[in-house]
Amino acid sequence: MKYLLIGQPNAGKSSIYNKLTSAENIIHRVEGTTRDWHSSKIKGLNYSIIYDSPGVIINDNKSSKIHFSNILPDVDIFLYVVDLKGRNDAIDRESINQLRKFNKKIILLINKDDNLDENSNFLKSGFEKIFFMSCSHNHGFDKLYEYFENNDHGTISEDRIDYSIAIYGKPNAGKSTLANSLLGFERIVTSNHAGTTSDAVEATYKFKNTNFKLIDTAGIFKKNKIDDKSINFVAIRKSLNLKEQIDLSLVLIDSIDGFDTQIKKILKILINQSKNIIIVFNKIDKIHTKNKFSREMLLFIKETFSQIKNISTLFISAKNKNDVLKLKKIIYEKSKVENKTISTSKLNAFLKKSSLEYPHPLINGKSVKFKYAVQISNSPLSIKIFSNFSKQIKNSYKNYLINKIIETFDIKDSKVNLFFSASKNPFN
Image 1 (cartoon, rainbow, N blue to C red):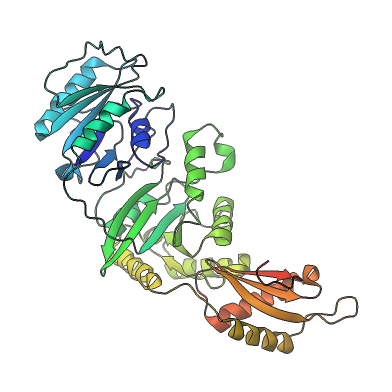
Image 2: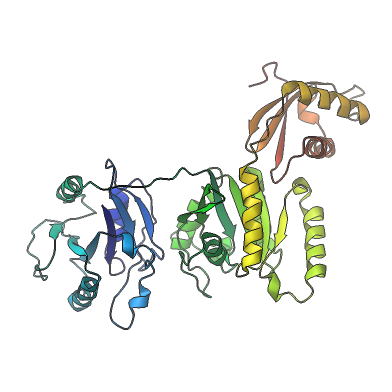
């Protein structure tokens, strides 16, 4: 059974959704926090899916505000949420009447009934069921859950996720447009207004029999433009927390804005902690001298971010199907490459050869000896090297070794981390 939460903005839909699932959609006192629909299984049930929708006011002239048109054929029952304390009866009645035109069952959830008086004068006819509840006091969910349990039947096709991708960037860089282009349909709301995506939005697509999970993250504003109580602050923190969970981070840059201070900060964070990363310049169609611009950006990246010489860089227009297909193919190829694992014997042979070709400068008149190397992680690639003077290894020599590792072992789109230790145990 598939349910869709719907109702006016700030009626409590996302709070109900979070309690019924294992998800953590952003909730906030500001109206309209949820701007895209989300879906998840209802906890403990096998065949019950619930969708959280943006707050909408439905009427004949504005039915286009329902941004979930792609999932309507799959929805079995509407869960219409009413705010008992602050609702506008006229708007709710009109919205419900419009929903009836879809010929689906409607359950009325009367939220914020803190005392469960169940004495609402709201229209009580024509509903499959009516439930009185209070999210803030966790009341009324037992009866609602019992209803879900009794109707937990049907089938759910759960394709295995083979590879996960998150799109990062500043507001209005075109993240949602790119996400929709990769998905092949208008799944995510787009707008010229910065900050339309206020929560991470997940969706899946299939390409060459491979299942991809795609996450469109909230645009990352400059820190001095947001406060720590705003929706954007919560959304940014949530977006950045995803970086270590997904397989690939796509950093999307507006070609018109180029590499500003904010993009440098975003890129630095993602380079250090993402498993894999690709830099994508969007809106290249708006640049008149494309070849010159591309050369300048590649040179800038090489000179500014010496630690990411091996990171792929693409120049696309998210609206251009050919460009998106090219990106899809690159992502697909990356999904087929297993995380690099370097045998200890090869790593130590490399270390011996590299240190002989270019020895570390003497420290206090003594030679620096690299005794042993072992890979301790492959996402991102991390190597521990045991040496005397481990705390005095020069950064220039560390960079030398990193560049040689990238070249020797063909490391692409991932930072290489080197750690130096005097410990005798390779895994300490």
